[in-house]
Every structure is written in structure tokens, then in C-alpha cells.
Amino acid sequence: MLTALLSLFALSPFGTLSDEPPPQDVLSVTASLDASSLEVGGRYRVLVSVKVDEGWSTTISQVPKPILQIQVPACASLEGKVLETYKELSRVSFLRMPFERVLGGGSESVAFELTSEPKAGDAFAFNVVAFVSRDPETSSWFVRRRVLVDIVPGARGKADASGESSWGADPKLLQIGKHVEPFELPRADGSIFRLADHLGKRPVLVTTYRAFW
Image (cartoon, rainbow, N blue to C red; front, side, top):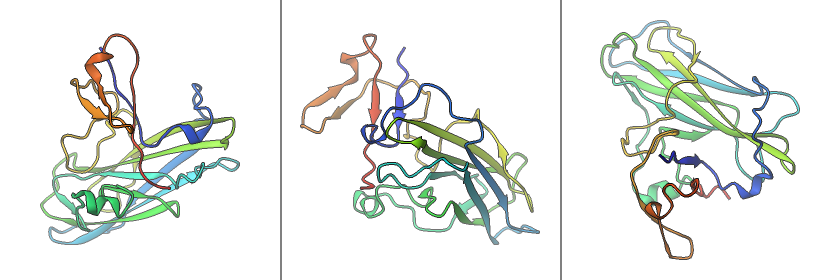
């Protein structure tokens, strides 16, 4: 069976993507719920910060800082308009805001409203994805970190590498590691790529251009 490999950016500007894993803590993520108490109808925020080891960079060939993706529990609602149309998405480089945003300063304040009483296990899931490198001309690594923050006062993030890289509320989003049904997509030259033509013959890499440059 074919597992679709997804990249958030075009690969060509990044030199060589290394097969070897980067140092374990080259990019770390911390998060905490900034609230001493919680009430339904109240507005709160989660603080998310990213630290990159000295000597490493996440700004590679005009690609911005890390991307934050937010999976929201049923008891909460993110503040901000949900972007859905092509015109809306194109104005913010096709980021699915408010569920997805650029960590331009290395940190983000995620505001939300508590819409119902949290149940046991309710938590925000934050995916941070980035390309990291010491020298982008030689090699780069794609790094993903996933952190869970429980909906309890003062909760702090817990690493959760095993979870899916899902975010937002669109059930049609393809997840990393998932098997996919045969599909058809237009190429840049107008021709049609048919997955069925390649099944069982070769790996397939689906690359989406995020229009950051």
C-alpha cells in the first residue's frame, strides 16, 4: 500500500533534506494555559513558545518561522474568523486561520472561549512544524513537535509525538502517515496527475506550495 508523504513547503529551496534525525532538542515547544480558574463563557488564552538551539535556524530560503497548527477540543472555540474561501485564504498565504498561523516571533497567544464544561481528557493539541538547518546549502531537516494542553487552570504542555498532525475542523484534511484513496490533481503545466497510474510502482511525494514568497 502507498503512504502519501506530505510536505508543507516546496522542497527545492532547502538544499538536501537529511535522512538522519536532527539532535533531539534542536527545536523545543512549551505551552501553558494562562488561567487560575475556568468558567463556561469565559475567554482565556494558551501561551505557546518555540525555542531553537543556538547555531540552528528555521529561516531557510525565505521560508518563514515555524508553523503552529491548533486542534481544538469540543468544549472550546478559537477567537477569530474561520477562513474558508480561496480569496480569504490567499490573503494570508493560504494558512487556515485561526487554526494555523506563523510563529513569527517564536511565540503565540492563542485566545479561546470556553463554550461548555470540559470533560476528562479534553485538551488543545498544538503541532509545530518547521525546517531546521545549520547550513541550508548542505542539509535541512523537517521537524514536527506535538504538545497537549489540558483544559484545567494553569495546565502546562505535555509532549505527544504519537498523535496525528491534525488541526482545525475540516475532516477532509489528509494526515501524515494515512493511506489515501486514488485521486487526481492538476499539475502546474495543466496536465493531470492520477495516483492510480503510480500505485505499486514508485513512492509519491505530494508537495504543496504555500505562497510564502
